[in-house]
Length: 622
Image 1 (cartoon, rainbow, N blue to C red):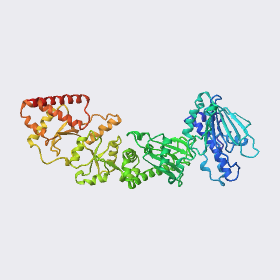
Image 2: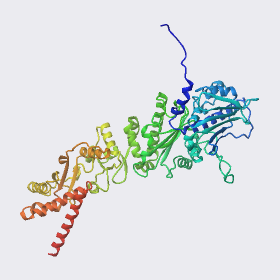
Image 3: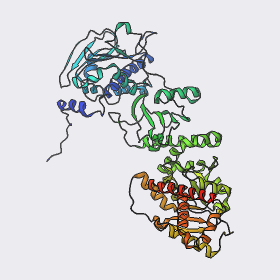
Image 4: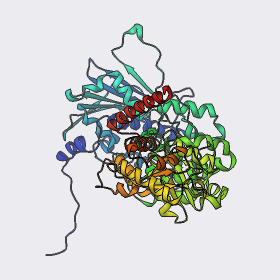
């Protein structure tokens, strides 16, 4: 067979149905596309005026207007932009995927620098109109002298009609005759919702009109958009009040943000935006972040992970990057080196801001920490380079409500901590252990966020020099004393009576001498066992039976007066019931300082407490 060359053909009859059904993921996107086309038409005309290729009245006001007519079942998109001649309609409308924006830029590229303001790229946005219409009509009049107005109409098939139009002013009107399945877009408030979503910051004033509104209710229309959003200004031109007002306006959050980062980059890429660190109402609020991506002030999507690293999506903000390589529907990004550079730059700027706060505003940084630490910890685990930048400014809240770095914690009592970091997950539940530590001048950090279990595992894997222990996982050496409350034989008896009384509890018994003589006993759970237990509870996954019998330990304090009394009480066989009652009560008290009792155990504890009170009252009477 001989070599053959030719052109690939497209079956136009099949093309439009595909575009109508599959080009865009959301049907409401046609409003964004047609309004954006109107803005492009105005930008083109402004460009021509700027280079002397077109004339305009000094007081002319540019606009894109959308008129909703529920009775006529139409939507009209009107602009006073460049307009089109009949030949241009044939060229740009009748040829699918022929981009008028690209054609315009190529024609005037040596005379103007307006490419960044032209939104369209692919020549497909107009055809989104057929997603909701049974008929689409264009009335347009070019800016060129002696141009004639043209009307183009098509029902979504391969045939169209062109004829003279009665339009008398420069610009274009696109009229959609809405089909039965899409009548939701004949609701004024539904259309307003879509405009607020996609077009709130377009550079041309956008107006929305209800054709069926009562005349007496009609007022002078106001633009629905902000043509100069805050992110386009330079940071030194913006006040704190403006940043807060913009935050409330965009995210409908009436709690002021903690702080923000204003991105303003012109080289090596064009990137502008504002990222806010929100104030949390509870520990799960960080999961509700929202970063809105814009392209030339047109909303593209929320939380696009290719541009915004996943951990930064816990923030709230806006990013505008005109040069992003979007696909035809502007719903997703191609994965290319340019996008990765943008993403890396955003991450670096966030890290730089946090470091700056730590160094220059340490008091404020401490105040912010409770809100921002879940985000920072998540970011460290997701991106090692982020951790490397921030590892020296990671701080921890202590049981004394102070904020210190890990290095400061280890240095403050190096001889006593010995490379161990003690932490608390619940200050109320673990109050007994905290008191033990404070009495001996020991410190511990508060790690009470759901993410902390994974974070300390990350730190231990990343740095082998540090090991974390929850405050109830083992006894710190500084809590013990060499002054024994009982001799070896008595300690053995104490251990035996507890084993006998708690034989059904499957718990290990140890006897130690603690400096705090007011504490009869404490419960310990080995660190690794507890972490597995917490992970199982968080994930809702059963990891199988864990060796709790060997890991859970009741430490009896032989420096406590009651515990020193038990060996002598054990000498009389008649006291066994009383000894068991005391041992089980001490066990439950230790458990309450460790974790909540199960319902049946709590009932037994209350009944036993009442019995002990009754016995005490009887002894007093005797």
